[in-house]
Amino acid sequence: MGKGEVRKIGARAFIGGTCVALGAGVVAVMAGVGVAPDPAYELDGRGELVRPTDYRTWVYVGTPVTPNDMNDGKAPFPEHHNVYIDPVSYEHYKRTGGWREGTILLKELVSVGTKEAVSGNGYFQGEFIGLEASVKSRADFPDEPGNWAYFSFTNEGELGGALKSTAAAFPAASCNACHAASARDDFVFTQHYPVLRAAKGSRTNPENRAARPKTLGAAAAPMMEREMAAEPPAPNPQWQAGAETPGRISGTDVPTDQAALFEYLREFRYRDWETRESARHPSGGPHTQLGRPVRVYMNDTLARTMRSDRRRHREGATAIKEMYTADGRLEGWAVEIKTGRNSRDGDGWFWYEVTSTTDGSSPVAIGNGVPGCVSCHTRGGRDMVLSDWPLK
Image 1 (cartoon, rainbow, N blue to C red):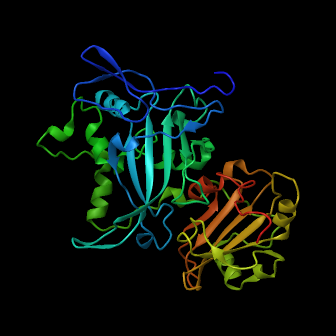
Image 2 (tube, rainbow, N blue to C red):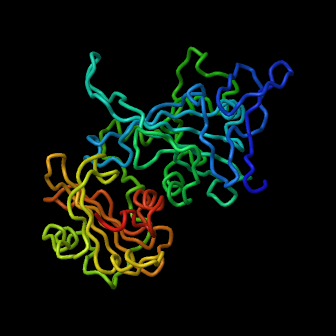
Image 3 (cartoon, rainbow, N blue to C red):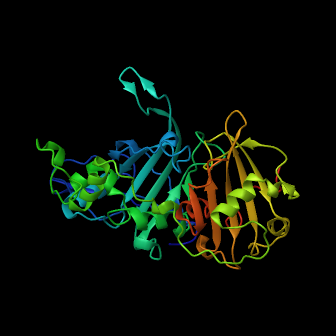
């Protein structure tokens, strides 16, 4: 593909022996339709994914939501996720039980609106705030784990505003670590989508059957039994350390021992650092609820790099973020410390977050290489540090 060339790729359906061209947007899929192997997405000349259109006419998969008030006020993804799959890939999944070359899944982000309705209390959708995609392609993403690549058309500084027309793939570590650790079916979280579980290898439209079989399968039985017995769930690997934390870290006075770190934060020793934001400001997420106040402090090791043209921070580079409630009460901290010379895709950084100022026994995350922290911090900034420079 030549420089600047846009590769147009569309799905095609064969109906009654006739090839009908279907754009990357509206695709009508009928029972018994055969499908061609073409992907239903397009890349521009820079290799960026062009934002699909008409995706709300695709096959709707489901809407998971992990609200803040069910996650100690700190859900990594507190919004509703309306998920769609291109119809050609859905047909392929029904026939073969596997994800075809060129599969694309769209995830439309919608805020949690009201929690009350005439039907009762719950989590009801509010406003559209973003759009993300995942694409499987050995041809276009040969080096990505599972050949899956992840994209976001959301303008981070314009949540709920205009979407980007194209998007570059995130670094592999930013999303694949969590998908590889926890997704049940080739990097896809089918365990949370009964539509996909029922469709897998069904060769027909399972919704047309009167029976409503259990689709989780034997592998999910232990999980269901634990839930029924009200046993505590297993720790979420997304917030567990993925690498060992070194015993000694130069360039910082911030400890990485859980008890010592919490005591350090409670004593506000970092407030002696010269480099800090001048005041609290609305958060862009996800360390606290979107729009709530935060304030960032940087130690001298990190500040020296931020002032220079160096792309990589030195060992001991440390940032601490104070997190506040809407009425200005301190409610916790987030900490990142570079523990060696190399970032190692996030494994070379120590991550910590706690959502209490009185009890440090249950941090949200602690340790090197925490996938949930890495997945966000690889998306921009300079060497895992996302704060704008100079600090305001």
